[in-house]
Length: 461
Image (cartoon, rainbow, N blue to C red; front, top):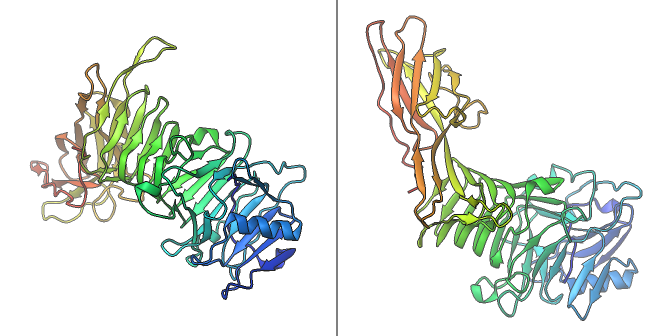
């Protein structure tokens, strides 16, 4: 099935034609707004989903001409935006510029009778995607806790059907998902979804915004083809990627507060991986990182890695184009807080704090100069001025799975009017947001306060 998806809310007054499905007591319906070129699917419960076969039937009866079925390929093509949300929640549709091509076209392959598109029970929000639209969706709608969509694939065999968005990164096709579930209808490996032959999701197109969404039970790679620098709209944050061969594969990507779990390989390098992961969690994976081809790799900021069950993979690779060997790497970075108190243990505001890398790698320190606040601390979580340090770099070598590990240490200097300068050397940022402290005394007395580790954070093994 081929499908371009845009799912969100729509004010009922904007719907030019609306066909209610009388068999559903919750008044489920399908409507089309010609001005915005949007098909609206509304109020279908999980027990009576709007399958693509049903959507095509409504389209045919109403004469909209937006849903076509290719019997030979068992594929549906939706040639407009497709949105799903409760009817009672109003929404102003994004306008389409005159002359803007309908195009677009993301696709999904699965039998129309079995693909489930409706209101899920597990997560809340909306799913948005489809042909290019220059005005973004109303930003208020993703925060609506009453919108609960789900897109599910009912495969008879593993990797039988899947989801394809766009033909390439410039031909249109968008997927926006908020508080959504995209998953196999039967949650097990035998029925995991994904495009033949490998079972991947192919998320091309020019827009991908996924927030507070769970993607689960994919036979192959979840984010294959995804790259931030090849899209007009891109954002991936607060998501769960679980139960798949791999989560992130290749490209320039930035993911924030995401969870990768129950994966064969959570992050899989096929040659162009260049990712920045912030506040991400890796748990219960066979392999967290498979770094095998790229000359770059992963920068992990404040991430938590549980030990992989089968170990990570580090391997050098001879680039056939340049004839040079590439060594992918993991760079771990962590925010720290410096706490300054006086002789009596009272917070010392206004103290000047300077952090320097002891190995002379100046780029390892970001925002290394700070001033303590009323609590005697440098900027903390949520503050863009917080001190950020590189903990370590693990880089592939000529010996497979024996990366070279370079750990970094730092000198922290503190000064305050009326107090002798205090200096601490050999600081290692092994835990994010760890508070390292200084007790400032008289001009002849200075010493550092004991550092209390944060038990809720784990260091990468």
